[in-house]
Length: 289
Ligand SMILES: C[S@@+](CC[C@H](N)C(=O)[O-])C[C@H]1O[C@@H](n2cnc3c(N)ncnc32)[C@H](O)[C@@H]1O
Image 1: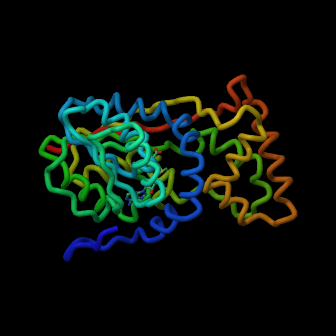
Image 2: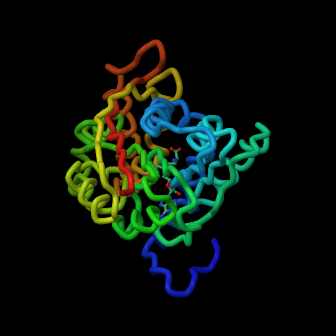
């Protein structure tokens, strides 16, 4: 990442930088094709909500391995897309994908969207697929992101609704809750996958950052876990950041038992397409005055 320019706000995202460049990057890189399958419906939702016109400059925040940015680039062949992310390893995957597909109107920046000095008023649209819930200061981050947009510039992103609305998280966690004295739902305003679950919180963050016409649409999609068996789906879950965090606090002698409990809990969700759990997100749209 480049040095922070003089006067730019300090970021407290060091923990996220370490997280998305460590084991979590290994996981997302090795499972990038699986994530693209699981999350494809949400790319389509963001693209639909974004109403892209050819020629627009689009910024994808927290673009990761680049799936959404790549789709967006096909909607603006005369414009271009910039993906921004903290993770060097995930951006390496994104860059390799772009090179192998010969895409010319898409580039990537390894930067913190909270503090990066975007070229002012240079973009018509900011999009994201689950990449905006990790900021230490969401209002400062969205105000900074807004600085990259032209007047009437648009925002369209996907973020998760509450854990109770997401079987992909809830079912494995409930299956093993009794093994953990302190298994709690994440603090509602802490950075993390569920940080934007509360509709009113999202509206107040975006309004404070200068956005208007803020709208949240509830969308539900089946979430096909990787593989064709419950064992493969369980294996995937325990490799995720959430699964690793759970197992890290478990007593070593119960880890196998915990894994078996998750496997049992997802049997009712086994279909001929593998294990399919439900997922619920907000599709958030807003625009600058
Ligand atoms: C859940 S992943 C989603 C990745 C990608 N959008 C996708 O759907 O496959 C969240 C992404 O947000 C990125 N991220 C988190 N905080 C960020 C920040 N402050 N600035 C830029 N990227 C950030 C992470 O590095 C990670 O790639």
